[in-house]
Length: 165
Image: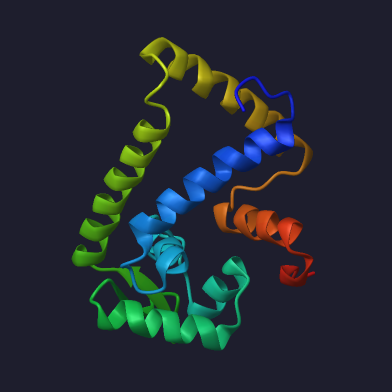
C-alpha cells in the first residue's frame, strides 16, 4: 500500500484509523463522540442551550435532551439559568467534566503520537505544516470551524442516507 498516489484512498485509510482509535478513547463517555463534542463545547463556553447544541450538532432536540440528561447525571455538565434570559437554560461544564475532557484530550494526543510514530520529529513537523496548508486551502473554499459539521459531512458523503440537507 505504501506509495499510493490515490489521495482519496490514502486520506480514507488514515481517517478510518484515526476514527476507530479516537472512538475507542471516547466509548466510555455518555453519548460517546457526541457527548465529547457537547462537553468540548461547554469547556470552550460555546454550548449555549440544548436547542443551540442540537442545531450545531445536527441532531433532534429530543436526542440532545437525553444526551444532556446523561451527561448531567454523570456530573459532567449542568443546566444553569441563562444570565441574559432567565427563561432559558445554558449547558455549563462542571469541574469533573473539565477534568474528564482534559484526560480525553491527553489520550487523543497519544492516539496522534501513535499514528505518527513511524515519522521522525522533523518529518512530523513537516507533515503538520503540509497538512495545515492543505486544510487551510480546503477551508478557504468552504469555510467552517465546526468539527462536528465536518464529521457529519464526511459520514453523509460516505453514506447518502445520513444526509440532513
